[in-house]
Length: 356
Image (tube, rainbow, N blue to C red):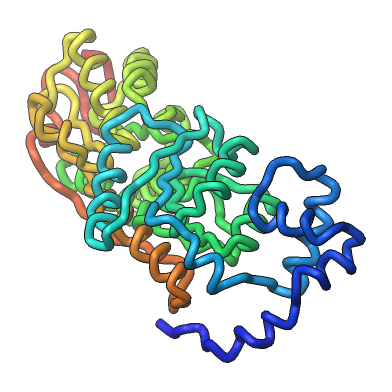
């Protein structure tokens, strides 16, 4: 880690608000409003001022930091599951260590936050923002940079820009490990219920699943790969559909523990026993994985550690410390419990299929 040199301050201080006002053809108070995130500025004017601010890299460092609150902003695109609670715990732990409080915000299911949130966060002036599965426009990022508010993305849905640090997990390796576990048990008809098509972590898990099959000499069957949304209903719906196949799967790799819960419910309604009739592997290792009966075999994604790493990075950036890398992936690991077993040979052929 390297610290930004204080020698940069005099150079930046020569770029004054008056100079920015003169170059953009607006008044000094208007430039001040833009710098302070005030909403009462026309968008065309704001964009013009932001462009000049970005051109000169203008920062009122001492002033911005002295007025910054003792808040960490934690931004979700939705706050509806125990998955989010793990992230909150990780950020809150780091906030307590640093004498800070956490502000929670969500974008009502949208991956790109709205203008009202941006105006609110600029007014709050948090130490930094930890964003979960949120995409930001270039204009939003420019405004955050102009206020010297660092942003770190945890578990990014898409590919963050080169200037946006991110914390993720080894999703491809997790998908590979989960599928190899089922193959080693003797399963050959292994289904995969992933997440949304455009979400990077889902694509990586499916790629790992496919690699494990092909490495083992097993054909990749697109009919066994389904897309969900990482929630319970999707797991139920997709397993119910998979069970209608003439050659149904003997094992399922669910792309999240919540989808695995839906798989449990659909299997029970179909009269199947886990793991006797169907082996199930989840992903995340949420507390619910240990509450299920039987306890769920799953890939542990270190959610609390990822969130804590994101919070520490945001605080470091706010203190002027640049990271050695803008991309960090924490390791996943397989946790074997009681939802997986060798496939039973009860009136149907495991290797070639056939109805029970």
